[in-house]
Image (cartoon, rainbow, N blue to C red):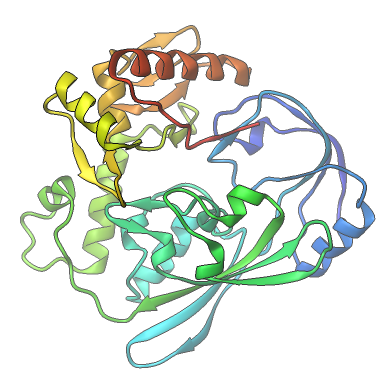
Length: 332
């Protein structure tokens, strides 16, 4: 395994901000990962996946580990379900395409989400009424401090909205994820834009749903290769009853949904647009003209410039509507 020194991390984050890693390694097996952790036990560690939900504001004086475990294999199956294990470094959308091509349902609504399989449970990725927690059986990881392999059941992952035990504690490196998918599929209407995209198809199949979502996302979202970004920048806020009532007084048309006990979810994109930030640019950073929830990089190599623009949005939304916006993107 090649241990590189003083590596520029700009190619490894979709915002393309610059930062130097003192050490950088891409272990391809669990054994290599465990050896790496033992050899560099005293170095600070930073775990970097596909880099689609993170950007850098500073150098890292330690070891950056970019897991490179690949492979997709069937663990078990019966008439109704199949369990599949995928390596952490597998491209997420390629994995979705694999499942759809085999007529396994459960992840099709998560099509075209950038990133890796290993990053999916960390963030509990979700779209169009589906979350990855709904299909994960277990997550296999290595504990950073001890180097021991650990398996987490679905419940032990402590999944929440865009959150998990892995994101909260950052004590583990995910190497493989096991999914339980259905061999049958029935389209259920949930989202207006997806229903509209499929309006001419009486009974959409898996491939048609995936293709529709890809079309929608391609229209809405900028290509990070030409306009660097990290997708949705903020989480949709969860409001208290008092916050909800205040918001609806100020914005009677604000979308508000029941979320959890005594909680209400609203749209971060809606609030950012109402605050006047859709398509707004400041220096080399701005919000995407077609989607207010996406901050884009027009040319800066400094993560701090992105952070400053983020604060402008947060302050404006809070001052106008009393709602706090929390980043979905991890800022280092």
